[in-house]
Image (cartoon, rainbow, N blue to C red):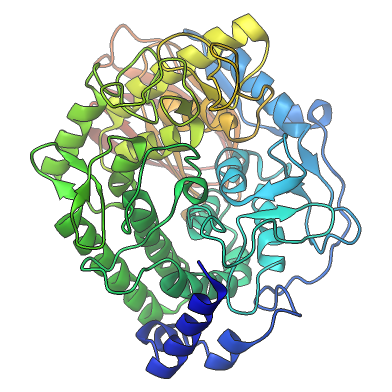
Length: 531
């Protein structure tokens, strides 16, 4: 995008008195300001020295899984944490960074969506290292017009991409990360700190990631900006970007509501609803049972990619649409491969069975988005099945190589290949924790063991689907640390015997065979029996 076009948009926005600017209460003075000051919407301005934790000292403080029937997944879980602890860094002097942070392990820059997805698994160790603080460095380098670059240099805090470049932003998921972290930690002060920066960032996206004069009024990204580097996609309305904006607004609404700003929350929810309605109007294809990107005129651009499934996570799908989407995910000719889910469906042109980056590679962030979307929409059984298949392949490659990788091949137990490397040779980066920690840690906790934390309300939901002896020890959420073990059973319908040890009172909700039972537990040990 040319600088003249960006300037024209800013002037037009100020003259027109954009509804969104009125909604956010952001003045035109802010939008016209120069960029001498960075991070003015984020209250933390300087770095406060904090120690970097090491795995050997921290292991005893982390949640400890119990899976008698799947010891290999426990092995993979601990190996992944150990790799991840090596990537916690202190800011370099002169960087302008204000917090210790998780690093993606391969570049001298920090990346927006890498960091967001690292937070999604590392939040389960929040009492050891506050992973959410990794986002502080993006907020601290935010521009006066609200722009946050997707990639920032660690040595000096400089943007890697000019604001005018089309690939300068990643998927807008900061608000999602903040709310998902809050649901584990219950730290409301964090929401107060982050909300102003996120409101200004969202206002910037409204003018910079919507093309004028489209019939659909949705949001665009490109291959690099979306994170799907060599995906064969185009159009002015992208399914993933538009769905992520729905998520952004809904999470801004949730943050505002938690802070007592219900009027503002209602406005954000209304905005999310409007975008979701537009997605369903223009992007849903009833014949194919998929969402597709669209061009300026609203014509669908039909590429079957993992980007088609973000509307489930955004919560805008009907039960009928979800069944169609799941049918595509279960189709062995497209997405249900030896490893799930390839970035480009196997029945599409350019699909590569070795991965070739986003032309068939299996990636942690999009797998997590799909599987989390399935869970949130009530499809827990299929979510667990998909997570089990994915983790099984990660473990097979771990046995061969002793590490986890940036991406995986869809049709063999191997790391994925790159878009530029030699044919058949790994292009994936090893020791990638990095977002690959999502599978062995977050999916294991959420989909294999079945725990869902509600830290603000000291509430824990447990989906009791396994039949081996399983559970989690030393699991922290909100102000509670708890251990829960379910004894081995003959079948999922058999009675369950559970032992719970907790240091604080909390509500445990057990879901077994679709039935929900609640227990208000006191500190100490409790024995529970479920028919």
